[in-house]
Length: 431
Image 1 (cartoon, helix red, strand yellow):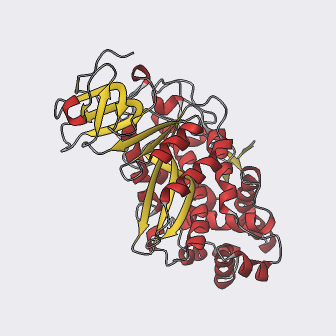
Image 2 (cartoon, rainbow, N blue to C red):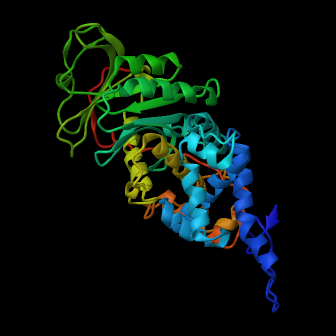
Image 3 (cartoon, rainbow, N blue to C red):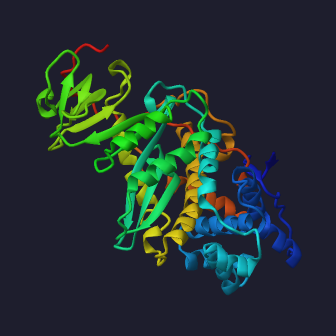
């Protein structure tokens, strides 16, 4: 571990003050130090990317962080220390090319298979995962959210993300044209199957799906993987509680300010056994109607509230962060490869933001917090003014300008919002 000044455990050179200007050779070496560290980290985390592919991905990520903008031109401008603008821009552009075009420019063995990186991304997340000792579902299990995001009328990205600290880290996706008639469910089932080998045996996984993704096939696929679906349905469906009669789910709730949790069977035809949650917050016109497969006694009525964190994740990808919404790419394959760049940048930024946020909560400079805290801070956490992504991106950008990176970062999940606080419980005794 190298102490890079100010007590920070950084991977990079120690800069001594000197009245003698650095030679061009030494200046070039210093400029590439952080790129080398990024490339080594990608070699360890994304082994499916080799050689030049890995190096240019590191270049993409470094430029996106420095520019706080994942668009190609802005990224190339931020990388002026790595070569002429047009040269760097061509490297970035060719990385997203179709494989045939890239092989023509770079030679054989330079195919980019984004799907091969999906389990590697999730393993990277779980390798950094350091639970803080709480007992909420978001702290003791992995929570995935499925949701599409649109880019004008051109394409749709079907994303699977890890929800974390009011943010979301994309770990798998498939991009389709906006006017395509293909089934989204088939793609989501495939994406979940790609991620499954990365999840350790015995680790609880909850998969949150909004209305529009309430598919029986998706429910079956999630359960087949040994995970727990949490699907949202229309309030017009029916439910038969165990030992009771079939009734509209609206009749199980008591209006705004109440929630109900119970086991039984959903739907009149081809009943689906599960646990129903009807949660009607005061500020909502309609209740949440959620179906899961965990027993009522082990079902967190507030878990679904974390699904809204994926909206913050999309905001971080677009206008609130990497400016993905300004891309001019329209080819789904190239869009998917570009998203791999932003997913890696998001994961790094969120990890750095976690360390910064935990250090500030303990009154320490981030460079002084060199391992995950084992105790909660003495003061309760205040409302977050800036997202953990924005905090981490700023911290990482500052380190990259100094050609340094921290040698240790981590992810410590926090409890999700408690949407049942202040609500009246109408549920039968949990069994």
